[in-house]
Amino acid sequence: MTMMLRMAVGCLALGLCLPAIPAQAQVEREPNAIVAFLQNYIEVGTRLTTVNLLDDSRPDDPLQVDTYLGNLNRLEAEQSLAPVKLFANFVVNPYFVVELTYDKVEARVYNSSHGTAAGFSDGTVSMAGPILTAQVRYPIQDRYVPYAGIGLAFMGAEFDEDAWWAQGWLNPTEFAAADGAAFSPDGTTRVMNVNDDTGIVLVGGFTYFITEHWAVDTMLRYMEVTTEATFVRYVNGKKERQIPGEFTLEHVAWGLGVRYSF
Image (cartoon, rainbow, N blue to C red; front, side):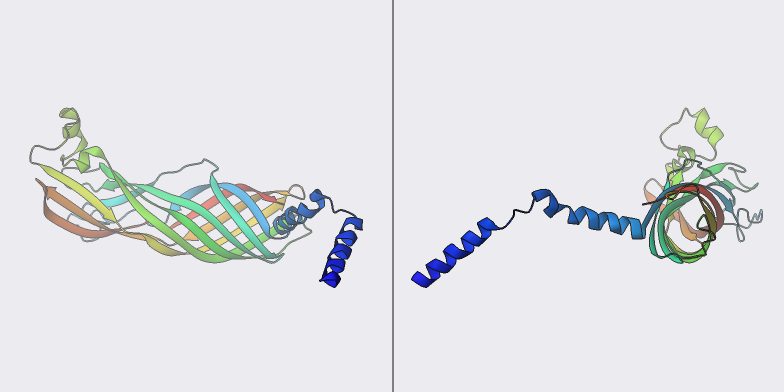
C-alpha cells in the first residue's frame, strides 16, 4: 500500500511539473483538418441554365395515335434564368471530379388542332432532381480547364393542371364564361398522373479561373428523360376513362455559372 501511495504522489508531482497545454492548441487540430479537406477536395458553385427540348412536337393526329397523349401534341419549354442551380464537386485529383447538382426541366403542354380544346394548354409537365456525374478534366496553364463527363439524373415528375382542364370544362373560354365555377355542369374532373424517371446524362464544359479561388463555368449537358403519363377522367367521382401516354423531356441544357475552390 505504501509503495502504491508513493507512485501516485510521484505521478501527481510529475503532472504538476509538466507545462500546461493551452486549451486553444488542443482544439485547433479539428478545424485545420476540415479546412485541409475543403481545400484539397471540395468546390461549390451555382448556375443558370436554359433548355432546348429535342422532341417538342408530334403529328397533328386526329386518331390520337402519334401524339404524346390524346390530343396533346406540342411541348413548349418554360425557362427560368435564376442562377440557383447549386452544385458541389468532389475533386479526386486534378484530372477527375465527381459532381452533384440539381436541375429542372419544365414544359407547357398544348392540344392539337382537333377537338373542343384545340390549341389550348392543359397544364405544365416538369421533371426535377439531383444529377450525379463523373468528369475528367485537362488543366491548361492552371487557368483554363476543359472537362467532359457522364452520369445519371434522378428526376421526379409532376403535372400542374390548369384549372379549366382539371375541373372538366371543354375549353378555357367556357370556363371563363362560367366565372371560374368549381366544376363543369356534367360533374367531370380530370387528372394527369406522371411517373418519375432516371436518365443518362452527358456533359461537357469549360472553366476559367479568374483568381486562385474563383472561376467562371460554362456547361453543355444532354439529358434523356421521359415521364410515362396516364390521363384519367372522372364523372361524378367515378372513373370513366383512362388513356396512357408519355411526355418526352429529352433536352440539351446550356449553363453559365460561378465556381469557388477553397
